[in-house]
Image (cartoon, rainbow, N blue to C red; front, top):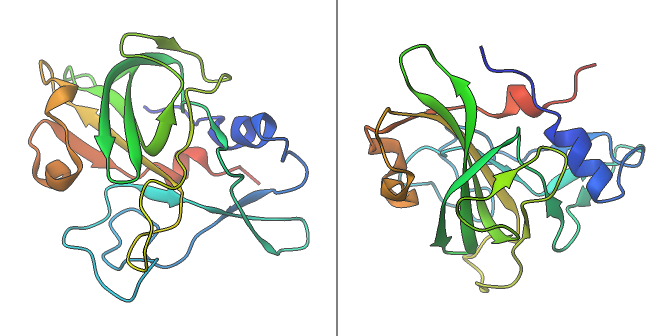
Length: 187
């Protein structure tokens, strides 16, 4: 069983938003398996591999954007097992201690970030591992700076260096799962 994560409360605390912004706000296309693109009038070539975090709601219900270069904690403690470039920044892959009983290991991917850690680093759920990357791609077809968060089960013996965004849905070494239920604040 996958434990709930304190990601949202830790993110809010690290970025001095606790008590100001109680939760996430999602546009169509930002959620797991969505096929539309939220930043332009178009569709995706494959279903969305995770969730895109850009907007929060404040206490008045108004939409607020993530802070520029916002600090990003991992979902749980773990080890950084891969870093690779993506089209808006870099991706950090963290392996967690949670296993599925068949040898598959839980991994989280943080896309479009600027890493604050190196491969092999042990990370703690209450400390930042990256910041939201800013300004790598500009233009009308580029999405705004945001955090992409994916979660999945990594097959035994499968190397995280074999993961890449264009083929993630078809990669037999990972089974993607929706991270949203694990990071949503409980009422």
